[in-house]
Image (tube, rainbow, N blue to C red):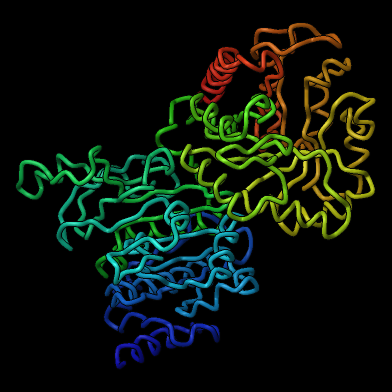
Length: 567
C-alpha cells in the first residue's frame, strides 16, 4: 500500500487528478519510475486532436496477480496525455465504467495487461462490443490477449468475440526478457514510423493462437525468427505455429472501431523507453480517432491496395452484384477477389443456417454470426442498402442500431422527404451517414438527378448526401462527370458502372471498356478531392457468372490507382 500512496502523491504533485470512479484503481508508478517516465515523455503528439479526447485505462486482473508493468503504463499514459495535450486519462478497475452512459464519455478504451475474466455481465460486454463496433477505439497490450478467459481453468475462452475483436488469443512465450530482432513491417505507417526499421528488443514476446491471422489484422511489428535465434545463440527458435508467423503489434478495424494491440509491455522499462512511448502515443491517437492510419489486413496488401490507401480510395463489391446468392456466399466471393470491402443488402438472404433476410430485426446472435463471417474473411461491410428508413423515432432507431452493431458507415436509401430531418438527427447521433440512392426519374423523383439530391438535402447536415448510381444517370441521359462536380462534398458513396452504350438499355461491362468514361470520371473525382466512403462495384449483368468481368474491373481500378498515386 505504501507504493500505491507514493504513486498517487507523485501524480498529485504534477497537478493531475483522478475522476471519482477511478477510486480503487491499480497503483501508479512510484517516484523513481515516474521520474524515468517523465524524462522519456514525447514533447509533442503526432496529430492535433480534433476535439478534447478521453482515454479510459482499465487494469483489472482476475485470479491472476497482474503484471508489474501495469502501474508504469498507467502513469506513462496519464503523463503522456497531459504533457502533449493529446488526451485526458481516467484509470479504473471498476467494471461499472462499462455502463452505456459511462462509455459515451470516452473516445477509446485501453485494456492494460488485463488477464482473466474481467466481467461476465452480458450487458456490460454488449456495451463494450457496441462501443467499438460503433466507432470507439480499443487498445490492448501483452496479457490482454488472455483477457475474458477463465484463468483458473487453463485460460478457457469465455468470450470468443473478444478475441476476434482484439485480433488474437493466447500467451505462449519464452523468457521474460527474450532477446529478439523485431521487424518493422510497415516503416511508413503512422503508428510505427518513429521506430525506423528493424530493432533489437528484450521483453516477453507472445506467440498467438487463432483467431490471429494476417487475413484479419494489419501486422506492424513481428519477430525476425532467424536473426532472433542468432541473437540468442541457437540454431532456430522453437516452432510454436506451423507458419512461424509471430506478430508483435498490429492494428485493425472491427466494424467502425479502431483497434491496436502490442505484446511489448511485460517489463516496466518498456514505458520509460522514449521510442516506445512515441509508439504508444501514436497508437493511442489512432485508437482515439485523431491519427488516420491504414488497417487493410496484411494478407490483402498488394502494391495496388497500398496505392489506394495513399489516395484514400476504397473499392468494394456492392451486394447486389451477388444478389443471386446469399450474404455468406457473397462474402466468400468478395474474399476470393481479394477485396477488403463490400456492401450489404436488406433483401438478401443471410445464409449460414439463417433463413432470413439481412435486415434490422435479426437477433444479436444472428448479427454476431454475420460479423464473425466477415471477420474471418478479412472484409469490412462499409455500406448497406435499405429501401426505406422510417421517419418515426422507434423505426429510425431500429435501423441505426442495426447499423451500429454491424459497423456500417453508410446507409444507402430512398426514404420519404418528410423523414429526412429525423434521419439527419440520427446520423449525427450514431455517426452513420445516409446516401440518398437513385434509380430513374419515375422510381426516384426526389433523388434521380444531382439537382434533385441537392434540393432534398437543403437544410440537412453533410451527414446526408448522395449515394450516386451512375448507371442510372447514364441511362437517363445525365453526364456522371458533370454530376459529381455538382454534388461536390454531398457525394457520400458511389455505385460505379460502365455501360456498353449510353442508352436506356445500356448494360454493364467491365470498367474502362464501355462508353461511360470510367477513367475520366475517377480522375476528376481525384482532382476535386472527392473521396467517397466506397467506390461500389455494382455489376448488374450476367448475375450467375460475372466473376471474370468483376476481376477485369478490379484490374482496371488497381492499375489506375497505381498510376494516379505515383509522385
